[in-house]
Length: 70
Image (tube, rainbow, N blue to C red; front, side, top):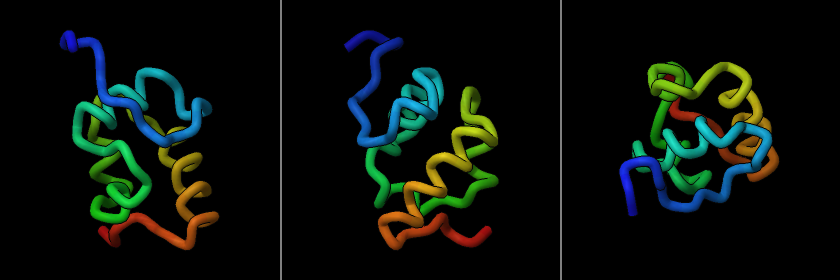
């Protein structure tokens, strides 16, 4: 794996390739991982913006999950 490659995630393509890659490189590859982090912390990751965070939040809600409270 090169520095540009990242582990596969279960996140929807709608969040974008860069956001998916950066989340994976930060160790977030599954929705359960996102319950351990706040939205603010995710937004601090380069390449992860409000649109991606909102899309992921909707997916979390569908699964009965939510981000960690900040």
